[in-house]
Image (tube, rainbow, N blue to C red; front, side):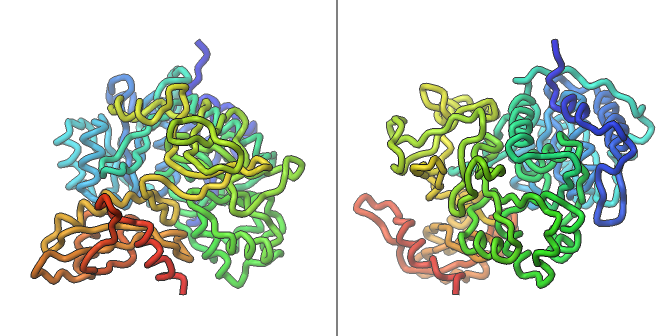
Length: 509
């Protein structure tokens, strides 16, 4: 059997000069391609020594670091399943993920080790390690004496490589199962479609618990044998200083907004840049135009999700068409896309409906949720993305909204039902509704609209403070309004469109 482990393809793409720099960090460290191979081999051998079951999950909640990348690569090459967790998740959220995925290994930041070990052991996890962004932790200590040679464990294309949890509209998160074939096929398509070439250098500023930073950016550079300039956190001034040393940049719209506020961003700074890519949230047309005017570059906007990785992209090659602001371009090669009505029948060009997709990049289903998986696929095998849009006469996809009230804030998915469930349990609260409204920095943020119980006087600030103790910070609404009643239709359903209209200018002044 030909080994279709994703890591085999990444390793084969390493340049012949293994002592060349693969990653240069913002702290002045340099990692060669040989370092990536040997260090990931040590961690893979450590995992092997634990005698984990086939298909064992490795859950990871750590700060961004090159060592965290090495752990990801080691998990792949050892044949196990990587489960990245947002660093903002709180204990209650982690308890659900660990309990649902039942990982055999958990890796966390040392300052979380106490409670994380309690949660892990309660779920039956046998091994807990720490990893910090200063190249310290028990994981590295345990891996240090291991051999630095490791034979990649054979895997088939449809074997599971990663599970990414995506919030559920009912508050219950779903684990999207991605195979080695899903990840590799998408990376190969993007390498070709985005014209990755010899000498490309990527500025990597994105988190690595997310599709964008972990799969799109990281795989892109590794599969092309390209150097990465590695920033542990997004620093707009630092990015502008390093732009002359790079050719490719990927970011969410929020990052472009902040870069435009830097006085040093001009055409000289981007003189060597080849490509700016935006995704994970809608890019405001004002940002698109301001970037083009300031830098001379046209941002390439694309569309993807946890369950599918990348689906569509504006053209990179001008011969294939222009990059159009307000659109996410054409379906990528190999991706079948249609806009359908509620009966799943394809709609005519220009008609708005649900976006459905099929292709080698589409996930295997939701972890331990066979019924939910069946619900999300059509009879003829298309995945219902939950996004709403239309395809124009030239073939460009325009996303006009999202079903189920999903909010995308700063590139992260926020589901109102999860937040509403927390608010509704608070003392003095009768009912709540959370809606997304435009925001100049984050693209979209949540607004909580709350009805107090009769005789109660909850404080808006107290409601938000209580939420911060329960949920990741990116989920916390930016505003809380107390109202006597919520707008409803004839059936008694809350009219969230009315609430969105009421608060849509809140942050735009």
